[in-house]
Image 1: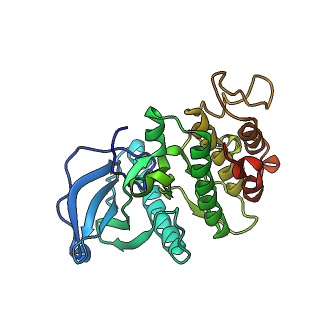
Image 2: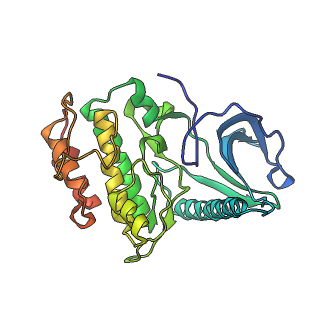
Length: 307
């Protein structure tokens, strides 16, 4: 297994070996960068740092607020994208700060958010571990291991929903297996870059999400410019996450079902039990209203059995 020390708040978790920012502004004088960058994006970087006074390690997401000179239509598109990413950075910080009022052991924790003339700085708990996605590249999970991980992820998503938050980017790349407690398969849910706050009954018409695990109605809504239920779309991504957990790879929403039906096409080599297959059949429903709720998922027999 490739050893990774990962924390990311971006859409993709990648280690980047580029030029490293060596100095923080005076507003962050109590932090010291450690010369390791975990992610490099178009306007954001995630870098490892420490609190000078205590030595505690943290991760800092640095988002540039610099605008570009608009000369062409292409420049206008770039500027709109930059503004959207800046809005998302503010929203991410607000969501994580709100979650800090009701902390959950399986959700990465907020430290502080600082805004300067040139950048936004989101300081987060530093998580040492390997993504589930990376782990699955070279390892196969047994049924009990998969169950332990999935139960924690469901609890983390339920905590978000109970606090009015839709994650919108659940995938194996955004769940970290902690090195500090690898024996027990303890996890942290990270990356709230696409997350949003919703009150009961409000539908989403913003299609910000990673496409890999996106629910069918999100894709359809984007094409038709219609609305969808963000909480129910998170349920679908839980199903996609579980499928990849037990099968090793998610084939995509377009390929998951047998032709002309809603029967899931499981790999012929799969050693999946009837219990996990039944759970997946009840989560991965095309109609969002037919999907299991989070409570129904937690009460399913597969979630309570061993072996």
